[in-house]
Image (cartoon, rainbow, N blue to C red; front, side):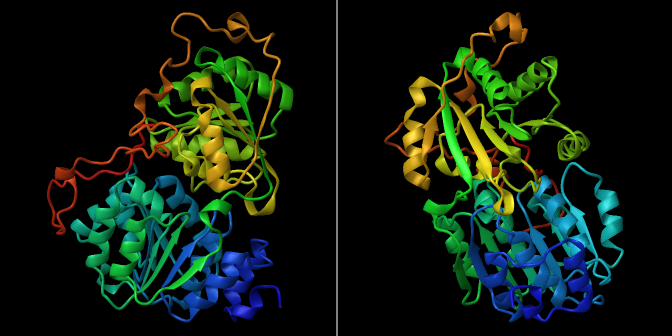
Length: 435
């Protein structure tokens, strides 16, 4: 039996899966769902785009009762991922009576409180807003039966590990925990050892296999002053159907957005300085009718947008695993994808590091850039890219020192949790990417 019937799910869940055109479980769903249905803790290491969201939502919705008020919590690192998980949850729970509520910073906390009071069964949110609501007495975690930590390694990178432990320590020991992560740093493994009960381990893909096989990888060499020429020349020659263009800085993201729009391309932009409503509008436009989305690392994980043919790294990440998570936005669920990276000459070593770390072959691409001079691109005055793209990067290391691991706006130690929570001026806010 190759479909979801083997899991003996209730009829409402079968109907929802059919409506969503989910016919055959992915590998991670095939292996994780029975373990979760049997009530065991689980740690899943799996590459991006493999159906992890369904792997934990399907069994949780199956096991919950409508009368189970606020019994499941799903913690994610970013607003965008929270919105995505909530969207999938609503579709899967259709007809079951199970309700979910979405909580994250940058949106009205009063509206979220009103929804929490409507007998929600599942809360999906980011760590800071969850703790804010705990401090206000609006989220009672003492009745939590199911806890999911999604993209755990990204939460570690963003400095949320103290907040996560604070939330977990406030919950009953007798709960079922599920931890999903693309990589398994020692601190994440240590977290699982402290709080999980004899968890089953699933390693769907090793670190060296994190990129899906259906992505082709290529790169072009360009000096910093002419990277925009390389980008536009690539677009002109290869004509991506639908692409995300990644930049390291908000300044360059805005610059690329203006330049591409001036050249007549349909383009949206998303970065951490934008209001949440603006970010959601950009994502909606990109999903429906826009060819390009210019983005900072806020879009490197957690955005479930189908039909992305190309990932373009205007700024190629120095960390191979940041590269992995970016290019994973294409080739979703078995589709083909293309990744193209622009590399400056002094950082050519990054190509070898990516190839060696994640077992891919990056092919050089040679472009004719002659027709895209500064006049053709409309570059004059202040309308130019940032000259020192790497200036905002934290902990940059050379070829022998490993990859970049940015701080991504972590709070200073004095602002982090001391292990207790109470109402007051903790200074906690949601993740606002600085890159």
